[in-house]
Image 1 (tube, helix red, strand yellow):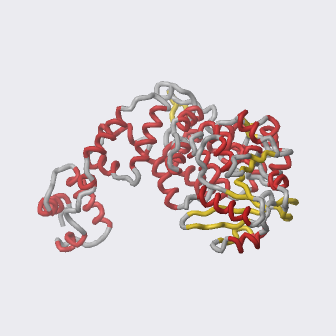
Image 2: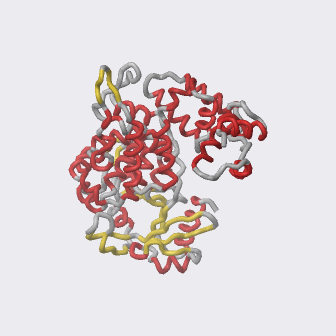
Image 3: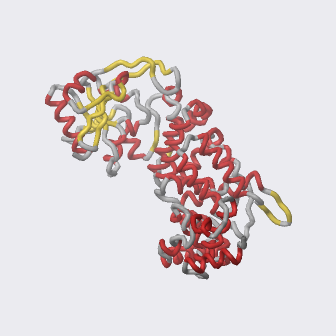
Length: 435
């Protein structure tokens, strides 16, 4: 059963049992905007113990908050009892929760008006206690009630306001915007994992440039990613970057990103993060060592945000290799093939395309590599080795650091088509690495 059908079935069961029940939050917002929601949530006056009785295939995911997860096959729907919340002491969770029977009380605790709507899925009627429908029509993100209170209750809401504005291409209502600016330093108290997830979504949901402009304007960028804020005003050689400084270049690249993978998105954001600390003028503007510095800074940022080892490795590889494309027409065949067989090379290629489009606009090297990738099979990029370490031992070579040098030289010759058979490989070894 699909999530929407499951949500409708849950609401029908609750109503047959005498309870109020509605679709609530983001799914209502998306339905009213004509989008297909990814998730469906249900709000009801049924107390948690009744939910567990009515839906045996469920489990509590927030006992204190009255949230129950109802499962059907691989899908699930969160069902929450109406509640009001009081006494936020840690900038994240209320210390006092009261279950309610009035849906209005449940709405008033929520973050933004466009997320405070409830819908009867049978009739399409919408309960709107906070002006959410008018704000949807006006394309506005507005905090429910006093924005100062909303942001001090849950500090992550500062970042969520930016994410919704970026994704939906809405404006942030002035009082809400000013409250974010006043309270921007509160974002420091939010866990790295929660911040990471919001930033990933800002980068991957299609509105990355708008998101980072808003992060900058609300002063959240300085708090979360000062290394990115440092790009502002850092000039670049106009011959290669007619678009302007490093910040403008990065924004243009983010604008062209679309809905990309998290690793490509972070590679796009961080590819030039090493430029501000390496900027100098010696006859012309130079960024000597900016790639190496960028890898180091990227590692620090990704570690700070608790990215996985695999994602960190891929983003660092994108930063480390993004300048290599300028040399591809002159590369030896073996070097070119090794470049092409990097893990997720499609992301390297796409980052290069975006980098070009956000600067000088020349795609010659992109097209060259794209055609190479189409022409060469996996067997041509990574052929079966002609010799192994065991073969070298049989020839009388002793295992050690020299082995990797020998095997690399043999592979170079193989990738370049100079040798094709094991006998030729051994002959090369004897000639270039005599015992």
